[in-house]
Image (cartoon, rainbow, N blue to C red; front, top):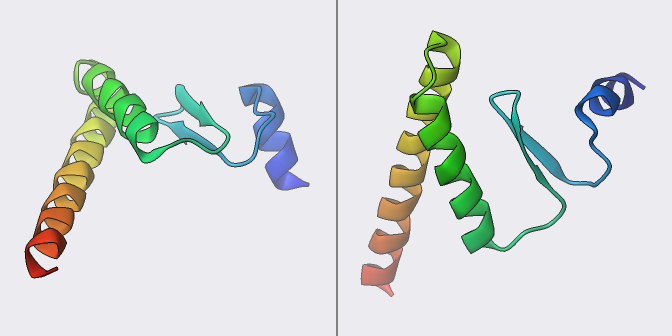
Length: 79
């Protein structure tokens, strides 16, 4: 399948597997804390990258994390 052909060169052997910026992979099921730590590490590295596309992805991921944090905080205040 098309997905298998794309996964093999990336050494993806677990499902789910998330690839960020074409360079950082998070294999298998992870806790939210682990997921957040890896994303934050990828954001730092992507934002420091001179490649505009990768730097842009770091900015987008950082915004998504901030939005998620605000949503959780708002939900906590309501409950």
